[in-house]
Length: 488
Length: 96
Image (cartoon, rainbow over all chains, first blue to last red; front, side, top):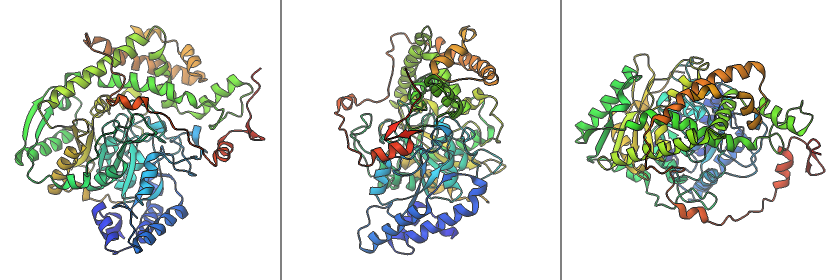
């Protein structure tokens, strides 16, 4: 069973193709693994075994007739509990949506179904994708498979932990300020945040609409490429989903041999606050690229110091508007104490929303309120332009930027819960990518002395996901840190 | 400093969130810290820079027509998700 659950995407897809095992056998192996270990990992919020096995059976029937739909056909994929899947619960990690049933499929879910993927489970997350540790989930705290006392990162906590623990081979998360890359880094797997507009947001619960983007997670770059391939492309149901060319990402990943990229190393990402073991591992990755013949040059991104303030102004402003819809009237939790319409709003939101969500809604309300709008929200939009311009200047000289994904490895549960600002600072290296709408990938580049994974981030030009995938694959081929298995 | 001006009760009213006294006190302190930190944006030199509301560059898409879709089992989902239903209507407290 271990060969199956810790097989790479390529091995699983090929095994299905060559009929070495069926999709039902493969899916049953992941179900058994989940049943055996998820009591301690707590990556899954819920699952529908019968539905998933029916999808696996349908895949086997297709394959027996030679009608398989894609390389993903028959491969289990886990979904962060933020995507609508018709007839399934969608909680977004919140009491507010605890009993909500999706009336339709998100575009990404439709695309996965059309590709024959077997949808396995709904994965835990920080409430409404607001958090970096899973500790803001209303239902459970997910554990890091490498050390169960530590957090797995967030907000796509369940997606990253489930993949790392061998409960599902591929998963989908969302990334508003690093929520795919940071947990991927902390769990020792690969996670990609595509360019803004690469993947449709239709049917994905909104947190900050100008920053949110779905992203794939897998143990290998190939798995991430295969998912991106299926999910990318314009969608008439999302006007912010771009009509741009979609490459053959899996093929591009393999074509890295002998490529000599120019890489920028922004010195602002290697200063105060960066853990020494993280620094050393990322520097080793940079040396690897240099040894392969790449040109490595120092770059300045002076606006990094504004990234966190700008993010928390813009993201919370958008959240305060987006989350106004959770009012206790139509489809959300309603307080049983409420006796009039005002109490329905005020008390339902008091009881249905968690503390971090309330804190961000209040902050967003503040920066949008009369007297503060220009000083905070208006100013932050201009500084966002400054951050974007800094990146574009850098990309005139280099193909990609190399940085750590997170300044620290996975921290202990409860370590930062009483200090939200300290929690926000852990996203320092990922946030500016969302503000500029760029693609970025996190891949494993080493382990700390006490066995915690370390992630390296590559940031690319808009729509240049192929470059990032080839670069990550080039490293992965020589340093297969991602094939190490946590001892559970 | 701007953060001394936070009126948490007014914000809670605007955001339609009832706060109990314990949370109110914690939030007030935390928001003062966070807003103080966010005030850093005021230092940035943004002269001649246009606000960036979106990183999306394909603005022609914004004018695409929305095509409404009929959802066959929409009423069924509506009634299963609503907090209270009566004769296919969502029940709310009296407004008038």
